[in-house]
Length: 71
Image 1 (cartoon, one colour):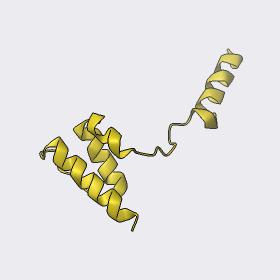
Image 2 (tube, helix red, strand yellow):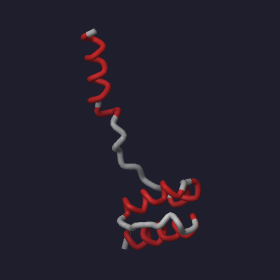
Image 3 (cartoon, one colour):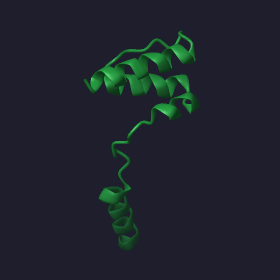
C-alpha cells in the first residue's frame, strides 16, 4: 500500500506532468477555438471580451491586441 501512495505522490508532484506550461497561440488557429476559449485567451492578453459578440468580432479584437502588443 505504501508503494501505491508513493507512486501517486510522485505522479502528482512530477514537474513534467504539470499543465501550466505557457502555450503560444497561433492567430490562424483562433477560428477553431470556442467563444469561451477565445475569452480566456483575451484575458491572458489583458482584454475583457464579451461572449455576446460574434466569434469573428472576438477574433478581430484578439488579433488587434496581439498586433499592438508587439509595438
